Image (cartoon, rainbow, N blue to C red; front, side):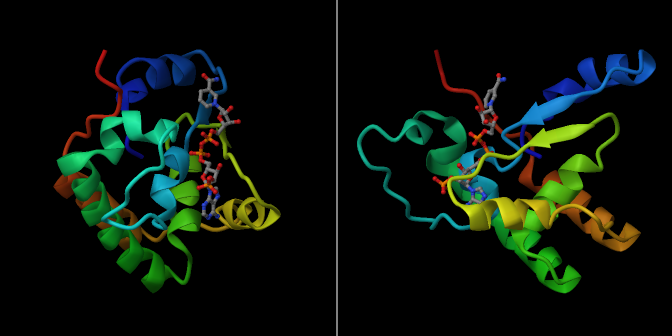
Length: 142
Ligand SMILES: NC(=O)c1ccc[n+]([C@@H]2O[C@H](COP(=O)([O-])OP(=O)(O)OC[C@H]3O[C@@H](n4cnc5c(N)ncnc54)[C@H](OP(=O)(O)O)[C@@H]3O)[C@@H](O)[C@H]2O)c1
């Protein structure tokens, strides 16, 4: 949802050549579950701290996005995690999403992103939320 670069070249190529596509980080290392507080302070050594998506203004913009996604998920009767997984696996050309998990409950919740579909209205609301979010900076500065 936050890293869309593959949509310009890789996804069209895979679709044209009938190649399946497995994506990683669908939950953006836990960010897109909506569970992290706005005022998070990472422990020393937490690898997430080096990514712009977890820093400063970018992080606050992501929290604004999550507030909008939470409203859409509530209306749909799902969690934010389920909404994000569902949206991800229904994007054109995406065959599989590699969802990480630390606990069995997390596997169950991510699996709850399968087996249902977003309405056109919900889809449009997510598109609008992503448009309001704007282009994210996702990779660490080198
Ligand atoms: N091939 C490659 O180049 C490549 C690159 C990157 C990653 N990967 C692979 O992709 C897989 C997924 O990566 P990832 O685990 O970093 O990303 P992810 O799926 O975006 O995030 C998973 C993390 O989110 C949290 N989480 C998951 N479900 C949750 C739930 N229901 N509620 C709350 N928190 C939840 C857990 O961490 P916490 O509980 O700690 O928050 C979990 O470890 C891994 O197997 C990784 O090895 C491959």
